[in-house]
Amino acid sequence: MKLALDRRLFLSLAGMGAGAAALSACGGPSTAAGTGPSETALNFDGVTPAASIDFWSNHPGKSQDVEKDMIARFEAKNRGIKVNLVTAGANYEEIAQKFQTAQAAKSGLPALVVLSDVWWFRYYLNGNIIPLDSLISQLDVKLDDFRTSLVDDYKYDGQQWALPYGRSTPLFYYNKDHFAAAGLPDRAPATWQEFAEWAPKLKATTGAQYAFMHPALAGYAGWTLQNNLWGEGGSWSRDWEVTCDSAESVAALQAAQDSVYKDAWAGVSSKESADDFAAGLASATVSSTGSLIGILKSATFNVGVGFLPGGSKAKTEVCPTGGAGLGIPSGVTPEEQLAAAMFLQFVTEPENTAAFSAATGYMPTRKSADMTAVLAKTPQIKTAMDQLAVTRVQDNARAFLPGADQEMAKAAAKILTQEADVKTTMTELKATLEGLYNTDVKPKLKA
Image 1: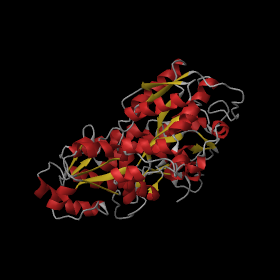
Image 2: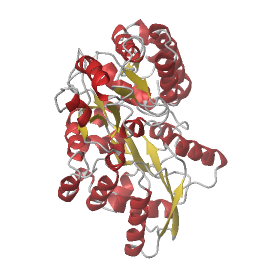
Image 3: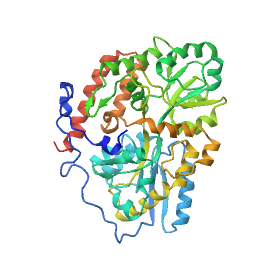
Image 4: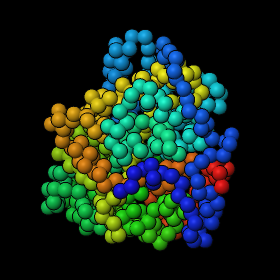
């Protein structure tokens, strides 16, 4: 698998078909003068760290307690710096909206902020966050000790724009007791086609309302449905060609719709499929690794976890990376930026990433993190760590187009909760995604 540094660059669109014409005008990663981040290297020589900084978090994976603990230990080690933990939203979307509001007001900005996988790039485009390279060098952050695929997700145009924090992949969660009662193997299905064969047995023997619960569409559809699309040879996009209306993509989403309506063995979570699964409402679901600890604490049955299923066209490398990193805003003082970088360095030290993983189920972001004690207590985390080796970088349309994730969720809602025609819905989505590119991305890039 290529490094994300290579995969994340805007690739040349030469040679694409007519369907890509709307996206083919720009192919380079450089930003136009005055429309994006500054290319001037930041210099923190002689800067004294601020005495107090705000850290905005949505506490991914119910991590508020472990965040407070890390802050207390950081302040004890760096007695001249106070870190104020601010609950800036209940989820990634809310924290992003609050950050945008502060940007517009040019006041009240944090020194360190949680940036989700679908928000950081627009902040890069708008010059709202700083490159971390000079701070990484000054503080001697061991960048090569980070798990390559996770840290490289934030490399763009030769610079590092964030460091990984609550990083996750989706996992396949299943009720071991239900699977045993249905006479099924104690493992995740190899493909969605295999699970479709298992589903009637689960419904007939377990008493659960559903064999499978699709994740809540808001915040999840664009992410987890990449698995279904990739398994059937489809995608939201290939490089910058929007492909959500391709025959392969439509077939994948038609199968998802059929699971709810025609075959009637799946439901769609209204809020959080991990909670529905833990309550026994469904025999299986797909949810973030960050839900793992919560599920294990809440479930009264034996919980199994496995890799995401493949499809008829691809059985491996069908799992997207995801989650959030930490970035430093450009609109705060150099003193605040340096203090934030010091705290960021502390939070991402190996022992702290292990502690964060133990508390949440998110993946340890450092290679040298000692996970022995964590895995002894929660061996299921190793499945997430192992799956990282066969992940696939997210489609550009989902990760880079501002607002695309919400549009994908709306389209998925039409398909999975309103039984809308799949081809029509995907054709409409394609037009919307191309419009987002032309309006919000293309003007900020050099042709």
